[in-house]
Amino acid sequence: MPSQTFELEGEYVELNQLLKLAGIAASGGEGKHLVADGLVTVDGVLELRKTCKIRAGQVVVIEDETIRVV
Image 1 (cartoon, rainbow, N blue to C red):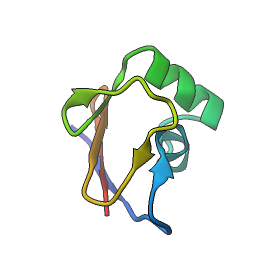
Image 2 (image 1 turned 120 degrees about the vertical axis):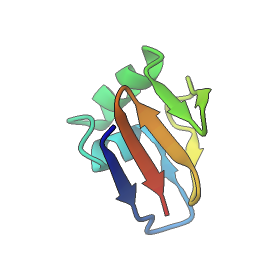
Image 3 (image 1 turned 45 degrees about the horizontal axis):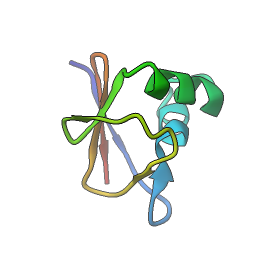
């Protein structure tokens, strides 16, 4: 399972923007669709809120890609 680390520049990043910044989605809009389609989990729980706040220490998984937020 591919894994990457994403370093926050502020207190949090919105989920759809994280997917864009991590290179999973081509745009924030595409990131919203991935979340709406039920393809994303945060800390092992299905996440359907497109703009939920992701903070340091959380792990986001989409299909076979893992993003560790630091």
